[in-house]
Image 1 (cartoon, rainbow, N blue to C red):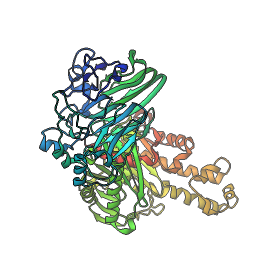
Image 2 (cartoon, one colour):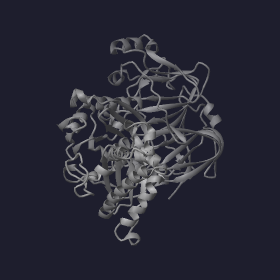
Image 3 (cartoon, rainbow, N blue to C red):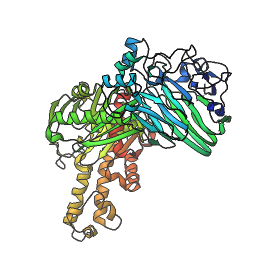
Image 4 (cartoon, one colour):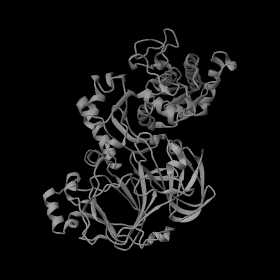
Length: 619
């Protein structure tokens, strides 16, 4: 059942807190409101729905979404914090340490600054690489803050704090904290403050020294623009997006997770329910379209899954971090350096992966693994490149080697198959279960998707769709056969036939381009309306392409055939006559299922998205 429900927080009275949160609509009988736990299933402070239920009782497992199935308990906790005084200098342990030594999970968190007084700031990490003994001495003599980086803060900034990072919120800061569902903190220094019992508050220095990252801290701010919102923090436990409106705007709560909406400023309505600054609403998983009306700033918080997608080419390695909705939240490329041998390429892939994770403030545990598209003949089951002419590789165990260097699961497939999977899941084929991709480039590549799964064939050696014969004894193909689909319908073949026509007909208008070296895949199409020789080249190309597509359609009966490559820039000049041929040649004509032909839309993103999708299909 679709639900949008307002949440009522648990309020915390800590000695460093103030009363600014009352201005955000928070109520408490205590003298202070240091924190309000807005979205919480933690036993130390449950938030309730407006109906008086806990989150799980209100929404149930299905309403919270399948992305939570991987967690033993509700994965995140969202707070408002008001620091009227300095908070303690502290650190949170990693999951591994905390589970081993405390029997509970550690804590990674992020802070989004809502407001700050002049000069207010936070401490995050060390100014430079530090030594344990030096830091211990600084704590004991009260100079620990001198070793830490101080950041003056202002409204709208975001800071991500991984476990192991020493940190402290200074006085005069109001912020929203999104964190793992944990209340485990090791206090390092507390200004010798005394608690309600009159004693100095407990420190946890011995444990803290075991988990601190003593390396110099660099602050990375994730800022991925995704249409109507900006992703500002990501981990396997939470994903946080910033958005603002001035008027009515529709959003889409999609995917297998609930969506929390935290209003930082303004007022208005969400799905007809009134909100004001400080309110938090929760939408059930898969809620779909919803509307927010008013003038406001807000955060969306949800639980996404993340993957690394690697598109390995002969010149560059392109990589990206991809979420389960098909958004590339961060991407980079590095030179392949295949001339330096397989091990160098493997190191480049591993380094690119770790760089992407670092720039996104992610750990390897935040992603499900690495999916990779690799040119050549691939044994995807065993993760081996059997042969790749592009890379000059033979029998390279790439999955095993990349996994050793990154600690991540690795799954590989042929790059054309990967592109087909990407276009099928996130491109023009995303509404269909059965798709065929044909890439019209130097050759004719292809990929087959049946039942939303990649069909790779025996030893993952499929699908060489470009090497079916369409003209017996015809043009020589690079594969050794004659008359192959590729020999007539690749961009290479189109250029060859254009040059032949020009050589045979010196009166062709196509000579206006100058010389044969300037011929490309668009030349014949450009002159087809004014030059009969160019038209003959185009007509022959489309007829042969239609023949090959009709053959494929008759064998597989896909819901759609997707075409990619530079030739597709011709748009309707290519697709409309091609569709007529396929409609004419397809078995049973209009009595059978239609096979529409569509141009791909992902472009060079298909490889990265398809590589990530190799792992998604296993979830």
